[in-house]
Amino acid sequence: MTLDLLLAFAAFAFVSSITPGPNNAMLLASGVNYGFVRTIPHMCGITIGCSVMLMATGAGLGQVFVAFPITHTVLRVVGTAYLLWLAWKIARSQPPSGNTAGTQPMTFMQAALFQWVNPKAWMMAMGALTTYLPAGSGWQSLGLMAAVLMAVNVPSIGVWAGGGVVLRQWLHNPRLVRIFNVSMALLLVLSLYPILAEVSPER
Image 1 (cartoon, rainbow, N blue to C red):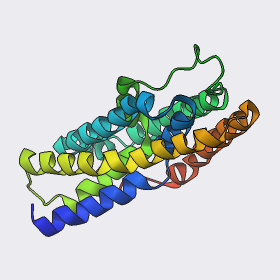
Image 2 (cartoon, rainbow, N blue to C red):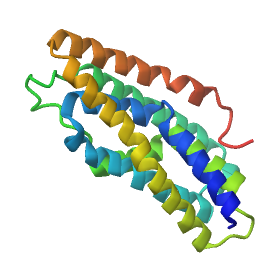
Image 3 (cartoon, helix red, strand yellow):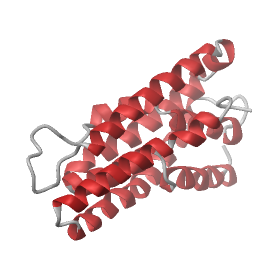
């Protein structure tokens, strides 16, 4: 894998990681409700989950969509249902100063597993591989792409969690926090539109 191709992939990974989407909307809300430190496992789960998905897809898992198109439809249904459930949880989150016993931040494993039902993550992985991975590449190139993705993804999504912490300092009124959480839940629902509008994960 050439350096030029690797740099182009790094730029792609940066744009994919830092632009709004389900993961970043949840990180922003988590930063507001739980702070940066308690959101770190969530961030790490996203990064590792996306990297593992990239390697698994490159190893041939993405061909399942080609051989069995129904699997993509199932992914959309499961992913949409789970995102709607997450939006409902965010909308019901308690203010930071309130009782958070029933609303804990997403764990590392939950965030990592979420990527497997996140249609945007699938489209990112398949788009990256079809565009930047040379034909006939082996595990070394896949591992290199995964390492670049991790290096770019962590600071990119950290911006969203950090943004939530900054907003947290301004949202002292529990009512404002509730309004924010409901707004983030609606944003998460709206993020489904471009995902559902896609006909297939690859063209």
